[in-house]
Image (cartoon, rainbow, N blue to C red):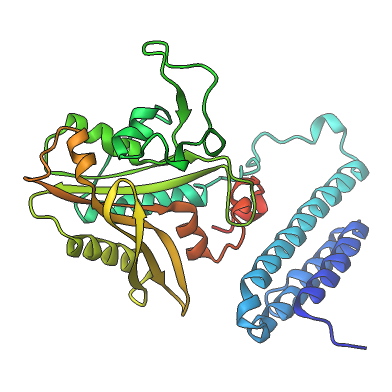
Length: 342
């Protein structure tokens, strides 16, 4: 018979633990079961954990995730068994039921939650970019076409404005009668800030954006972006590359590398795709480039006097890369067993 794989051993262990803890009826049996499966030295879970080093490197993220799930399941079985044994002991006691409760005893501690991994990532990005001199700017998630398209140099004929690629709302702006939609990018915040703020400008905008993508391992109809904008005198592509390099090494570590590939975006010229190389693999993280003069003119800036750069990165993509998550949907299933790992 072929030797069981690491994941198969975990499944066998989970079934054995389930039947063992389900059969527990006494404190003595409960302690024996706890030591058998969760013992710190010779417990079965500890023995399987030692085999993690033999798992192929590419399979370790999935193996680690499954191990944590099984561990949490067994710990939950232990908790249920403890409650069951306590109930049985109380029912067998000679003390009348009305006198069992002792108000002087400490209560059961509530399980405290923590920040969602996406929120953790956002807070870390704010901290990194704050050290680089960028301040956080916010804007509405329901926008008009001026902020979402026109001021960003996206022509009416551009495919990005297709109703099939956006969440247009049924009701128009009550003041202007113009169409409204859920923003498809956080670049809208950059336009709002430039309209009301003279140069220099150095901001980041972080938040939810919406596109009617079919949910799969790498796409979701709602996700988060971080966009950066720097407008000042004599800003160049060298400044953009320096900022992105400092950001990448701050978030992913000193071993990360960055490269630019020529691309096209209506609101930047020249435009590039930014790739990060981390753990011997190139990953596309977002677009960047020098702010197009048409965008500067749209907000009242003089492109002969100031220049600037902009970049946009997917926050989910950064979070997934950092934590070796291979399916974006895991972040939104609200499965506490998954989320409490981070």
